Image 1: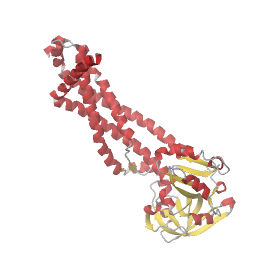
Image 2 (image 1 turned 180 degrees about the vertical axis):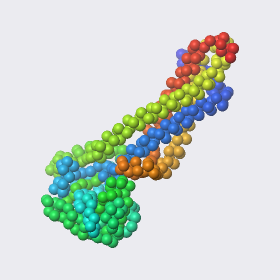
Image 3 (image 1 turned 180 degrees about the horizontal axis):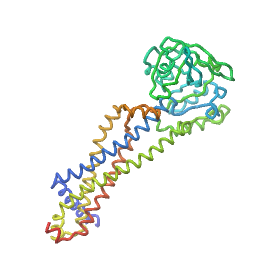
Image 4 (image 1 turned 135 degrees about the horizontal axis):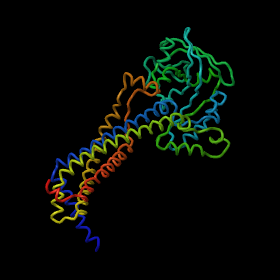
Amino acid sequence: MKNAYLYPIVMTYIKLAFRNIFRNPLRTFITAAAVFFAVIFCMLMRSVQYGTYENMVQNVVGFYNGYVKVNQQGFWQEKSLDNTLVDTPELRERLLDHPNIKAVVPRLETFALAAAGELTKGVIVTGVDPQAEQNVVDIEAKIKQGTYFKSEEAAVIITDGLAEFLKIEVGDTMVLLGQGYQSVSAAGKYPVKAIMRLGVPDLNNAMVFMPIKACQYMYAAENRLTSIIPIVNNVNQLDKTVAQLKQLNKDTQNLEENYEVMSWQEMLPQLVQLIQADNAGGIIMISILYVVIGFGIFGTILMMTTERLYEFGVLISVGMKRWKLIIVVLLESLFINFLGVIAGMLAGIPILGYFYNNPIRLSGNLDDFAEQYNIEPVLNFSLDPAVFYWQGIIVFIIALIVSVYPILKISKLNLISALRG
């Protein structure tokens, strides 16, 4: 019975609010537009921040290091070929049995002194499976000159920064000198099969790729690997996948006992700290934007409220209770703010989608700045769902807080002053 009594009253307030909204379309449009643009600006700013982090992780982690690695126990603390693991079919099968792992990529990574003519440079030598490596570093797609090597070849592919430093081209010979497994001497002469380019400057200046069989032979590390990189189907389930890999069957071949399974956060804590520090600065910057937006919306609300003071005075003078008028005005604010937020989120989807597919290339001083921090000089945007709904929610809350002003104005309205205009 109580609900039957309240329903028509609530519907009356809603009808009055809608009539006021459509009675002055220009006023409604201006108020909603303020919220609309606020949502878009916030989405753009946060999308750039998230996109920058995703680009950093992709360049450093997904691009070369891998989101998760399986190493011999202790290898990450002491990166020596003596701490390499034996490449066994059982180990690969255990990894591939996991539903979130679609492939495994074997690696033999170490260091060497590269020489060509009278020039020398310390380099990172990475022995790769030519087919499997396409899941991590798509070497073939990054080749500028030459052709991709085959698994049985004894040749190298080098980055263009290294090629420029050593002044060598495709077809020239490179000498590699290093220390192999159990401290044996490692040396070899290899033809340069191709020259490639990597997006990360530090890697682009010092990378040498060669077929893993040739690399194992040179370093006297037959059938040994520094790591295996499992390729996950869904990065969002990475933490769960790593935890499950660490809890494989407790037997003598258990990964937890003989190997260490590490996520990229464990391998690169500096990158995590860098992202966290930058995100803290980003929160401060967007908080300042929220304050600016709040004052912008408040200016619009202030103008609209001043314009309607005579209207409020007339309604109160003919007998409408102030609290009822406050309810109607509050409903108006809710509808208009909701309209602005939804419109801003819907309009932001294609805008962010365009910039996501067409990232902005940095040039000039910005390009140099990006290279100093070892990230590809590209301004990426993110399509993370949090970019959309969180910004919409926050701007909606700001708009609601600002909407308190007309409510306070009505509660303290002087009828004589209002009717005089």
